[in-house]
Length: 117
Image (tube, rainbow, N blue to C red; front, side, top):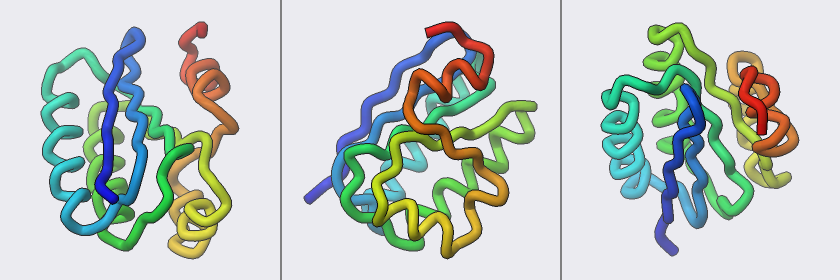
């Protein structure tokens, strides 16, 4: 199964909704698309909705870490939301939740970034 990516912007927040499997091949595609959106210049924060992600490997974690560093340089924050138990376990084991905040859903993530939903 491939990865479907949907981007939307609310004020200065890029919301990325992923669906499918985030493996090595899909991670490369996601990285390029995500970087292009960040270059548009209006984005400071990113919300990553992983509700529909069924699989993620270390290359997916690598993409997130790389974009996390870019977002921090912009003075922003990366927030992950709607994480299923299998993906949550990967984040916990990799220590990602030590640097990336987890919110229950997009509405809470937007509120936490100061954007009214």
